[in-house]
Length: 443
Ligand SMILES: Nc1ncnc2c1ncn2[C@@H]1O[C@H](COP(=O)(O)OP(=O)(O)O)[C@@H](O)[C@H]1O
Ligand SMILES: [Mg+2]
Image 1 (cartoon, rainbow, N blue to C red):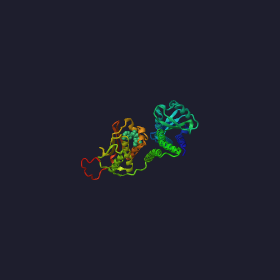
Image 2: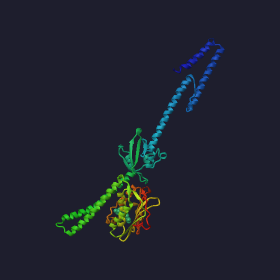
Image 3: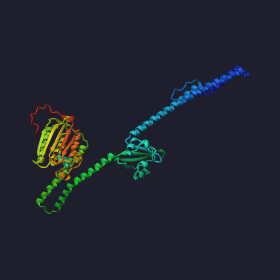
Image 4: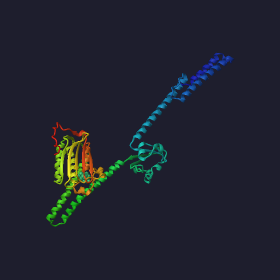
């Protein structure tokens, strides 16, 4: 039903009423009555208009009620307003969601306008580039991020090229920057923090360089002898033997190096560890034997078992870890020194295997770096004693796989204590341990 004919009907009704009241004769009282009716009607319309106006000023209020044509108009207006509100609310909710997601992204995002002024940036971009949304919005990007390489890259037409960007100001971050075009000449800068990846990459390069260097020495020696043999017509048996001996030494060194490298690779590959109940008592006795065999009587070596607890772990790996600590003690302790091995429980209920020596000791500045691959305090000495420089790196990995850690206490000139510490959860208390007579702690 079209609404406009109703007011028409109302007016026609009024005119009809006027005629009925004898308005045709245009008598005075009839005119007055018509004027009063019309005035009343206009007043009613004005009042309705005022209510509508009041409501439109505060549309969150419920719509005023009206009958007839006003009812229709108000109903449609109300529907229109609510529809608009809902759309607005949905758009606001969508925007909030988008901002939340872009805010939570690990990648930094900066929106630039056609003049390369910052329009918006997310939190990650703020952290990466040292920018602040409130302070830097509206600023030209080249005022904030300087450097000829950056500007050249920003001007590139080809947006597929990434830029490796070191943030000025010594934050030590390395970023990989990407750009993308947006509508209306706007541009998107995306930053990825590649600091950690770069560090790992540098470590890998170092490692490969170190390995190549370590391999080259023995191979050069062996090749040298082989060439010398080649040039000899009839090698003299005595020299031949001596040379073969030296060649064997070098190939042993190669084998040790490869064994350690393979061990490290296996440990780093995070291959699943088989857990078993390791008889530490037996393992320590074997360590004692190994140490004595390596020392060949040059050191006083003893073992103290202060706990009979066993350990949940991998026997082969523990053998390798303990073996590395023991062989270091023997190799870095001058003849006549003393070495003692000990298995004990610590106050927090964990287990500790320690190797104490009266060797040369280590200066404090070296201690934090000892478990780095190929880190040696004295390269010559380590090589001369057959070290690969990988022993403590292997120990660290193995202990980590057992949720344990390596503790090093050392005094230069006096000696060192290397302790493998295991958490209480890995300790298996001795079953019905028969009380030991005093003085039986030492073996
Ligand atoms: N018991 C120790 N006494 C003195 N120095 C030690 C001892 N154990 C390890 N070191 C130092 O730590 C370095 C790294 O040890 P490790 O990783 O086992 O490699 P290496 O093959 O050289 O023994 C050694 O080169 C040595 O300088
Ligand atoms: Mg070693």
